Amino acid sequence: MAIRQLSVFAENKNGALYEITKSLAAARIDIRAFSIADTANFGVLRMLVKEPTKAAQVLSENGNIVSVDDVVGVKIPDIAGGLSDILRITTAKNISIAYLYAFVSRETGNAYVILRVDNNDHVEEILEAEGCTLLREEDLH
Amino acid sequence: MASYYQKEIETASQEQIRAWQDERLVNTVNHVWNNNEYYRNKMKAAGLEPGDIRSRDDLWKLPFITKDDLREAYPFGLMSAPLSDCVRIHSTSGTTGKRVVAFYTQEDIDLWDDCCARALVAAGATPDDVCQVCYGYGLFTGGFGLNGGSQKVGCLTLPMSSGNTERQLQFMTDLGATILCCTPSYAEYLAESIEEKGMRDQIKLKAGIFGAEAWTEEMRHDIERRLGIKAYDIYGLTELSGPGVAYECEEQTGMHINEDHFIVETIDPETGMVLPEGSRGEIVFTSITKKAFPLLRYRTKDIAILKRGTCSCGRTFVKMSKPMGRSDDMLIIRGVNVFPSQIEEVLLAQGLTSNYQILVDRAGTTDSFEVRVEMTPELFSDKIDSIHKIEADIVGALKDMLGIVAKVSIVEPKSIIRSEGKAVRVIDTRKLY
Image (cartoon, rainbow over all chains, first blue to last red; front, side):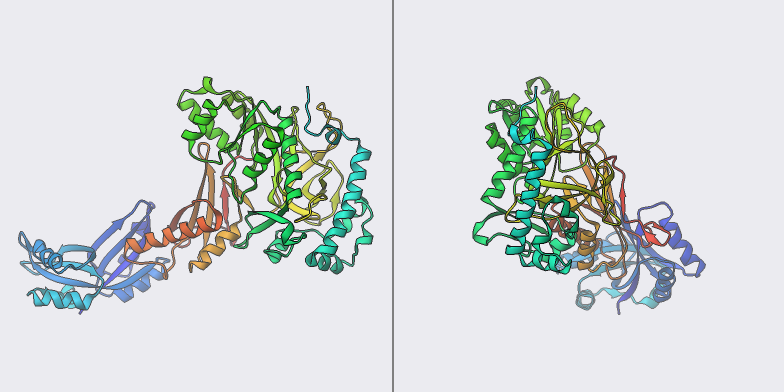
């Protein structure tokens, strides 16, 4: 059920980001969600794209270092408290989250949240038990 | 007005020096033949036996000893006295994870102390002096060497080792240190601290003995001006006991080599041919008074020029110039010998087969040391934490291997410059020579 996320290593250097987006654009790959974690010297880009394997290949061939990892996606109502409710659950259940990000969807009334956790199956089970709607990759594209 | 620690020796005639060298070389060759299998085999492989070496004129016949031999012989292979006679080791970096281990009998230490004492007296030290030794104590030879020399001279010796600036300056002023022994960059660092604290007029230093890393005449003048002292150079290697192989006198125009303990040659680093004295070449030393770990024709990889002649100080020992460079790729960073091959070994052990580069610079008084490594797919993670952990693991492994802390930066693949297909491994922007 998990969603495949593409991540890319980018050195903190002028043009690093541009080169990556340029490659994806040339391969006609549309980015659905984009997030970047930065440190002083480098950044890790995380993206949701329609064909993560193809995108990974395109970027690898271009000399980028990439990874495709499974993440958990949840639908939330796009209202005040939507994100907070998810975190209420994960906090109560002591779920360790490496990182998360949220983005609007094409669906009216719903937004999407991506969670990077240690055990995807376990977390998905918990969220579903709490009445959450899990995201599937088809929902994204 | 020159003073000497051992006047008869330091001002001996050339004939006397020659006689000592001939006799002691023969003794040492016999000693290693009789006591050390590695040497015996090396000599046999060269078709030699002790009888072939009758004087220093025959020195050229002996094969060289290099770091490769030391690595092969690690740890006891080149020990030439029984364990029961050896009372200490010191150690320095090898070209790989195998360090160089040097052995000492009590007599070896005694003679080494004499050499350092000569250096101190040449710098003006007397029993009335207070000698602050800020070289590292431990496996490194700097601390113990100058400590031993200082005690022999009779100075009040402050075994400070390096670090803890507050305490260094506190003792320097409270105990009235008059002689300072440390690396040139540490001397600069202390000078800066003294200036910042406005303590210059509390300092009673008159002289300093600086070595363990390359330093220019410019740095010397800077140290002399800032500390109000005369700054003397000293040279040595762990393989030849430590500091005290050669030392400067008040002329400060080169370092007198203790020729009663060492025979020096200059060679062409490519061919190994012995060059006439006065040529620029690689300096090779043969220890002729050591028992536990005498090295015959040890290639230092330091490039220098020998100058024989009269010195106004009265000493008759040949002088060597400051080293002018190296014939290998060894770096000295913060006083520590670093071989790029050691770093390569650490990276390989971490599973990094990627390209790397070493950047060394000196912004203020301390060397900066950075290792840049290209990221690989195996090491990449979408979690920042994991990448930072790899960097930290490399920093830790380098610290264990080298003894100093490097900054580690993981960079994009192909971002490390290649020149004509060969990666540029070391970028050293310090002006040392």
